[in-house]
Image 1 (cartoon, rainbow, N blue to C red):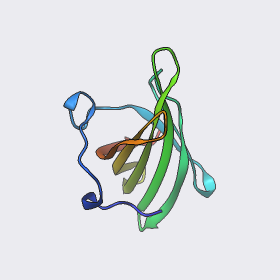
Image 2 (cartoon, rainbow, N blue to C red):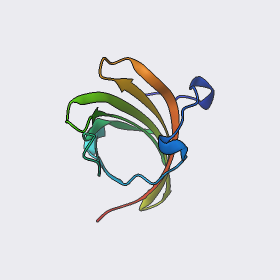
Image 3 (spheres, helix red, strand yellow):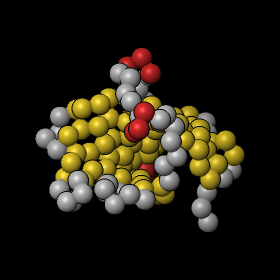
Image 4 (tube, one colour):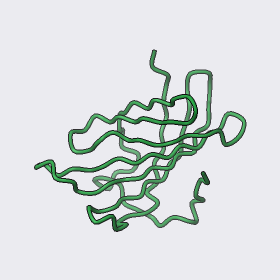
Length: 122
């Protein structure tokens, strides 16, 4: 996987035009590079993807999830690519880009920047 440079992506507005809004989720980095991601929203499905080591204390992860309308019809999908840096034995920071697709799989937004922090759940 290659992590896109900021210059490779187009600017994108954040939900509610508020950058870096808190979005809670659970990420399960499984052995051999599998990734499962769950977010607390009824209008989106779980994320499924891959992760791999990118350098010392650095990783790249990519996952996709589906979006749904209030009537539960499929609205589209989003794909997330994250550059992860371990900041301690149980913490990391991530910078990600998000691409949004409509139900016909047409790209509707590209390169939305997301910053994240996390701590290990035990």
